[in-house]
Image 1 (cartoon, rainbow over the protein chains, first blue to last red):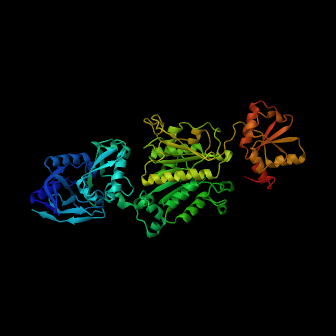
Image 2 (cartoon, one colour):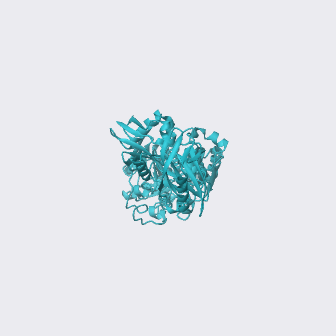
Image 3 (tube, helix red, strand yellow):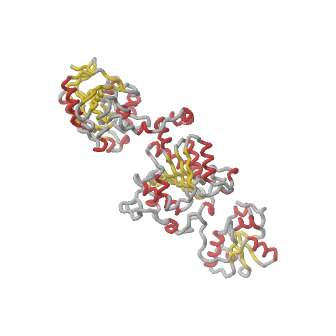
Length: 140
Length: 484
């Protein structure tokens, strides 16, 4: 389960529409609690993929992640997950997403179109890497 | 050395909840191995089925990415810190990923390849890569035989074979892809049938032609990897240059008598054949297997090495024979290895290449690719039947056999004197210059060389070459004399 405010979810949606037709991505910062994760802040990151691949691939380079991690550390937060958009396609993880993920993190995916954000779901990888499970979003 | 590994938050559940773990190790790779042997559940999140670090997992030693140092071999020292950092990638379902586009294996195939599948270095992913791969073999002779048979057995999905020859009796001592029943058949047909019998799940494409500067680029374009099983220099340079120009890896092997060589020439990653041998040897200096002989099992060993490296390329393995020349001596049973270096001045793969398209390789090497070289000066010649007629007439002639003693043991023309080619000049005084001398060998090449050498050394008598050697004698005069 992941807890996040409506404001933060809207920020993710806006980022997705702003970057359409490309994928957007960012970090979810917050805390790991006994009853799930709490997101207190999002951290937008530039999509490092070259132009041609931007439409359906995104990549957060490790040095950017380190920077995000340092930022989180300063604010006494942790990286609890990531968000990205799927332009013109469903908000479900692809095989590619599955191969490039770790368990425990939350992966929020928002489906985007030219003028609006559509579905938004959060996903968590099964500990044996076999699949993603949809995760409950508790909007505060 | 004790080093500290920081465990990222999402993976702590696989490391008994710890955020830092201290291990003893000499290298970064060893530290990760130690970590994942104590916490086995961590391994699959860091390493893929091929046992390599997952491509989104980055390992930092202090502040440096080990990929920019020596990878897993990067040494660590007391007090170092290792951080595991993911780079985050993902994407919509639109594009089918490489993994998804690989062909599936049927249940029969899974059963057949089970010994591969249970090894993590191959696994399902690797076996599917083999199925998706295509390899072009140049030649189905001594080297091509094991190459083709092992690649077919391993499940390489599409194998192309180029050959124009027919199966002859003297091939069968080493070319185990062909059998006695195939004598006189076209080699590509015989090879195709054998490979199909080994593995009906793969595609075999036959190209019955000589490999030439005209067809090489077109042929190579349709395959991922080229395996060189040729026996002559013009074709070897042609294969090399066409591989460099089309960006394909060239899995090289060559054999002579008891010695073999193997390497992987891949211009994008290292030296090519021309970096090693910029110029061909002078024509006639290096004898072919037909002249010098070859131990039948030698191409089996060298060809198996070529098949091994081909499979490793397909599986994406490291430690290929790139920039390495492997030398094998079957008589001493010794392997040696030389480091190769890419030559920046290489005319085909260097910084300023002068060869930008295929050239005339027979001219470049000063020899024909597929015929025995003919001596330059005109020689007096006699056919086997004429020689027999002269003997029966009682003409005063002497016959000198310039083959080796072990060949003399296999078959001989009656009434001849044996002086091996290497001794013919030093033992010139044993040849009567007053009498007409017929010189013979197995097929007529060495005897021609002997005549030239004798003339250069000042021999005064008349020297006549027996056309076609003892082989012609056996065919045209006396079939009881064995052919070999």
